[in-house]
Image 1 (cartoon, rainbow over the protein chains, first blue to last red):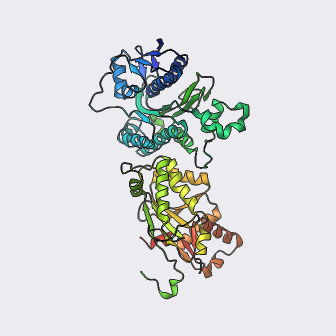
Image 2 (cartoon, chains in turn orange, yellow; image 1 turned 135 degrees about the horizontal axis):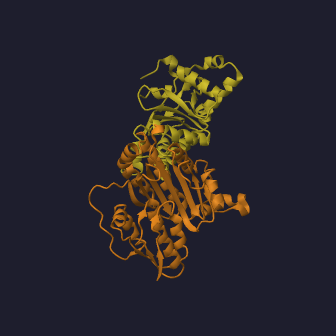
Image 3 (tube, chains in turn green, yellow; image 1 turned 60 degrees about the horizontal axis):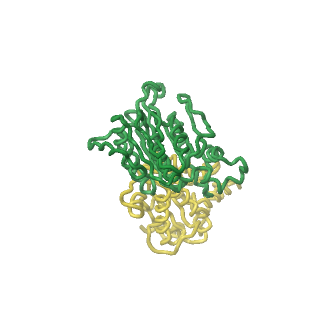
Length: 297
Length: 224
């Protein structure tokens, strides 16, 4: 069995390190060793689940997951519903900690999106907690919960309409005291489906000729609203998400294949376009929404 | 209510069809859903509205009520507003060919084809406007809308030019302009072309016999 070590930090900035680790596996069964994991956010959790599904496809074996030693990290993963989802894609070395029955501070637990009603479920479920976090923690106006729900709906629909494979969504808010001095809400969506290049290829690759790639496909969808559907009404989802995230001074990034494209405000230093990343199937969408600053109120 | 004999010809015979989208959402998609989100949901609601419209004699007026919809995403707005409007584009031809306007109430009559239906989207909340405006712009459409609240005015939302705005507002303010006065009020050619365009886009109704111009709000008020 091949042992692959999960990085100690697994978040939206370090996801590629995990993907780089797992894309090296081929035939042999893999043990993903997460014992030293110290920090994980929704992007990292969905990355781990995606890695598990990827490894099944690559190696033909269900990978083994060794959970984090840190009780805080394991407990957090448990509260986020990670182990419930991981049961389907991993063999767990040890039984996961039980989820506490009390009230949870989680905004949106890891949820599988495979059908239309899954989108309805997450939109319904998130209402009360999103309203609380958006208004009290992020200090957004009361109407923000509707706009956030629309974003959530559109980002989940991206899985259904383009991935042709199930995906996951999760959201949580964090206090980025050191990095930003403010709270930030992280919304992550990921799948291991077709990816943008394949989804759009049939309709648009001809016009790009030899330039058609993961990055040109992302630019086509992200910047120009192109979609594989000939219907003029399609392709609005990402454009509207971008617009709303920009209004909230947030980050939105889409990683697919070997590329990542992003709208980045001045408080974040992600590059607007990255290429030659480790090739990974599907798409990973990350949205960061910062607490409103005093000046903007 | 019966119109006086001398006005009977000028009054389109209407049959009102008011759709509470939330009600339709619960009945046609799932009674657990309370939000108008996802394209399949929007499509199901649109198809349910179209099925009700099929029971009417064309031309028809449909009052689509969004007041009890909390969340409307872009995909649903595209289905329930833009695609529904596209099914009614060219309303003038069908309306002017017939002698009556059926305002959909969901019973009786042949199938109205494309171009046979006029729409008013009412009960709009603040957060409905952006997705609706976006899909209207994307399809280069305009719609007659009314915000939630009994006293809210009817408005034109979406793609239109200043001449269309002026002409529509004039008819809207009067409710009805008798056919005999239309060429006097819209005296130049551009204005008359503009009115023709508004009728073709289903934003005004022209009585097929009398030539009277009706604001859609004027037709809808009879059923309030």
